[in-house]
Amino acid sequence: MMPNIYELALLIPVVLIGIFWWKRSEQYTRALNFAREHCDERKLQLLDETLIFSQYQLKHGKTGHLYLLSVYSFDFSADGETRHSGEITLRGHQIRRILLAGPQMEICDF
Image (tube, rainbow, N blue to C red; front, side, top):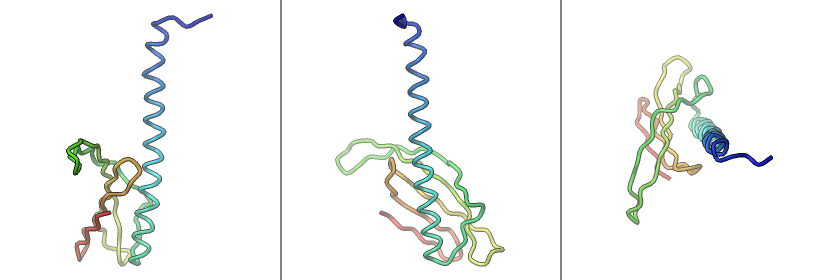
């Protein structure tokens, strides 16, 4: 039996939400791994081993096209006691920026 137009109209959003969720989980994993490596290179501890989604940002590229950035925040520590904030920005799965707001501010653009 062929699905009717109403069943398809209900199925399409469900499939799109599933694809969005799958892509976001891949993006989160990439960002978490990069934040962990970045902290390890600087002898910092990534606290809670987690990232928190902060926001979406729309930016203009060099060609004038709009693109969507995803921003995640995290906490890190240099001594295991003091908590500092960090932020990682991605465009798709590509890391665009990481910011460490500790005793010495560090911003790395990629």
